[in-house]
Image (cartoon, rainbow, N blue to C red):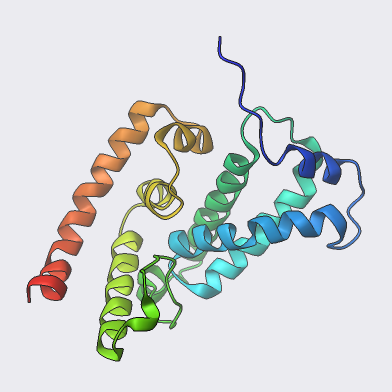
Length: 205
């Protein structure tokens, strides 16, 4: 049986567990700085807009700091963080829906001027028209992601935004590899249908 992989966050998590949280200081500050961007990116992609992403991120770190003392390294710490962020984002959207406050714009997202997390090389050399085209494409990708069901949205974000392996996704979402592959296949079908006209417009039009 292969030896378990060493979690790179072990020392930092143990430092947090050895202290009482009194404000965002010391190892808790380090933990926040380490994960704040990744948590926000996941929340933004799942919720579809910046305001909800901030709310879900705050909820994620609230849960994280309250429960880090009980973390027992039975999974990678990063997997646990992603799981909390995804659940917080999905729960927030469900609460909005139950209160009839989830408007079409909130679900679709992409209209708040927020720059996406997709990385494009040599952005500084782009012409203004190219920058506008790239940002329009990013918004279309985000809209396509937002049209997925919450389960498919979560798995797409982890695979293509956070670049997690199939094994890491299975661990994060606590599902089988077969389920990971099945959900990704369904997500691909939806994304292909949504983005094919957009890609034709940008690259063949």
